[in-house]
Length: 375
Length: 75
Image (cartoon, rainbow over all chains, first blue to last red; front, side):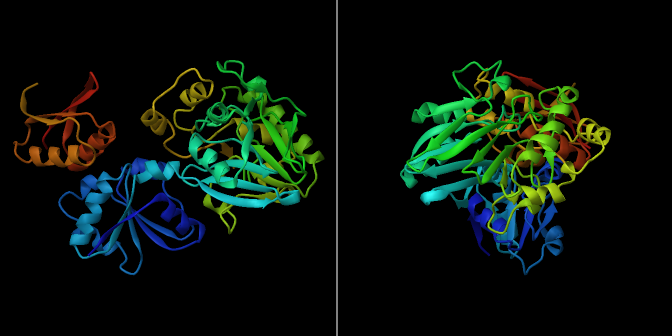
């Protein structure tokens, strides 16, 4: 039988189009339990490759014959070996090129909406890690928010669209993934903005992202405006784009809220988080569409693969916005928190420009889910 | 520690370090020790999990000049 090669983009189609897939994940059990490829209609079997060295016959009954089969490992070597063994045993099998490493890096651009006078807003969905980046385009100019480290993808996308990247923003100093912000700005001549309260230890040049900073894109003057909204970090800043979209960074997600502890100051920042979620955001229009910097679970994806929901709906449905008791809120966001993201302290150092790991080291640091939320 | 055999798996990528280690350990007797040299960082967790599932004991492991060294006593 045949062995075929799938790219991360092929897998992304199955996730977004809600297709069925059987994944044989041959990584260690703890790696699988920590982080896997999530899909609405995916089934899984996790058997480490080193338990299959004597043959795959024993696991054949556990692999359905009427479902497409994808073998996945960390980098791809073991999945090729196991896929070939399955093929010799009479099964069609595919393996994921580049393994979980490539899945972690894949970005799917999804259009989330039109801006006035022909402008467009795109969300870049990093399915494997749950990171969301944004590009607003209007009148030949672009602004980028919370870019992940794959700078070429944003620069090439802007070229394809025939627009010049003028502004690059980070809503806060990220702790779960490495930012591409300052590198995109350096390569394109764009202005890079970072909240100064998050940037006290930053060693490169940046423009202060203060409350009320507003830039306009193109002739139609589409406004991208900053709204100080601390809580996840002390500098965390949200954005309102074209009076229609609210980019919440890591403060508010679709089905969860931000955690205040990743910079080590949970107790200090609880009241900031509370004020942002229960006062500052309450003053905004219910019809704004919330666009967060992360999703945590695949159920947060809309049918077209985007992650977006009306603010009014979140006020009604998001548990984190409906804790009337302040003490309960304080406990929820400071006690029994989920584990921190992998290498989060090192990642913060990278994003401050203090250390410059090579590409392989960056890949290692970013292994695993983002873990920025509290549900 | 008496080392019965040494396997040089330096420069090999997953899954080869474990594949070769399994083949080599089949050639020594129960209770004897195999030394494995590897450079694939993914090997760290894999050796631990593989030895655990096969019943072998990792007596010692260390890193010297970027080379991982495992001392595995056969079950």
